[in-house]
Image 1 (cartoon, one colour):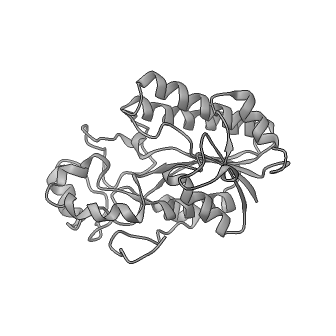
Image 2: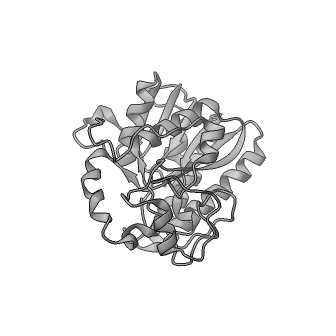
Length: 287
């Protein structure tokens, strides 16, 4: 496929571009700047808040491509607190709408977008309804950043209703990690509260890329969300002991494996064939 990746210069985007290219796709990075160490040819510079620019780029770019088969939308101000709430809302909601609408008008029928684990109720100051959390309970956004992710999901539902041939997949990514980030993980063990905010979850960027690749390959028309996390937690302690200590009154709906994720990936396994391949517990693995 010919695939545009917005935000392909970012932490997650760089790995996603590589994973998709290794699978035999032509991949084009739409971003404001090239990736670190990259050159001008590694990016098509674009302001995603400008609807005209986005529509034009998704319809074709001279000397690069005449049309696209799919769009992966990762670009955003990536977390709460990095800009004012208004700036985050303005940038992220406009970018999301422009990409969705521009793709639809260009006749692109496959879209994957980065939603977020934050819609599950992070930082869980109000405990989750049950553990492991999954996609079955209503979204509980607790920040402007998370609110936009929730609104993007709702927007995509309606766009798929308007166009029955459109396939949009929302990836509720956990905290994205690269192999060089894993050296810090042992420091989490001395205090269970350090990482309770996302139920001790994470996603290796390479496994996030795998999930996106599989969604592009297998998803049928309509909208679906998937929690995308690694199969284990960031902790050396058992998952059962963490849940019992920090969330003693929250029902645990299954027997947890020793280090099993409490961000359920069962739906992604079932419908996408997703299975994490990387873990911080195997630091010898190379990108």
